[in-house]
Length: 170
Image (cartoon, rainbow, N blue to C red; front, top):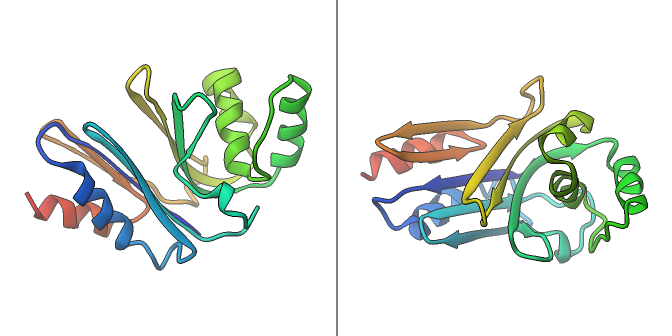
């Protein structure tokens, strides 16, 4: 099932906030919990290991250059075929995960790559160079993605309760 969370804030220290948001979603991902924090951006993940059980597939996951970072909740049914296509384009992989397929596909092809994804998902990709994030969800909304934008503070999560909790702590 997994759980994802993130916060962008110029007003508060995001590290304790993301730690709290991830801890509130341990029931979604009891196998591994972690987060990435850089300046005013924090991304967190609670992992339920289903595909590639190895720790190399833990998230947040970065590309080799560390420019891009992804957190992902869901399953991409056609990731093996998509991976073969990317390998034929000389893209190398370090895992057997569908997460890395999404990340490398986005790096190679941009937003249009998301149209190829078959499955249920929500994810966030951070581009550290451009200093922006991309949020995406499957067309049916099977994997939830809630968000809040209040007073220039952006918060998102797989569940609404971590967002409410963070808003209440202002």
